[in-house]
Length: 176
Image 1 (cartoon, rainbow, N blue to C red):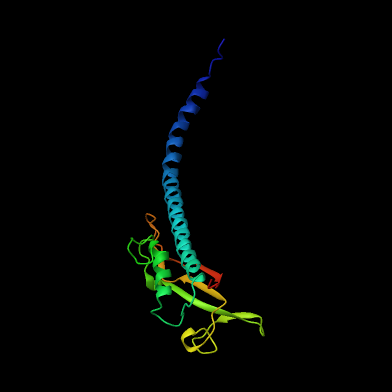
Image 2 (image 1 turned 90 degrees about the horizontal axis):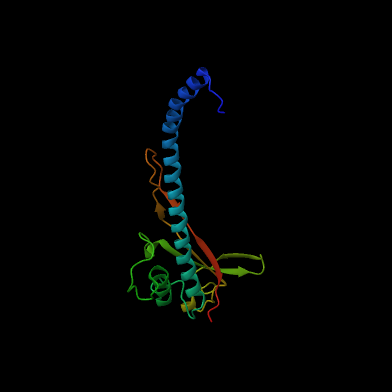
């Protein structure tokens, strides 16, 4: 035997239908905003990982080269390393992996360890520094970074400034 619902119980459940629709209508914009935000976080994470791969490729390529002149802006080893990181080839014959990334954004800084102060510092372009052409020595560490690359988040109804992505890596210079 089915229990009979009282008339007051039927009326109460009928009144809840309108509030469920109203609550759902209020939650939809929040859910959409969260989904768009998660998509943007994924886009930023993916782009940062790709930039990090570029930096690692440049550093790994340079760390294994001999006779690199870090003080010369036209050193072929440095140019080949940057091209390798950007395109996967040393002659720029392929398209760039990361849209908007240029050669000028990649910075390479040689560093040398000072045993007296037990610190590392930027290796100067002098005879007692890293100027190979003037008789200087090789650096101990290469710092490769990307500066000037920004991403603009696209979230509806929100104005957010472009966010700079600055991956950096330090590797020992081997010069094998």
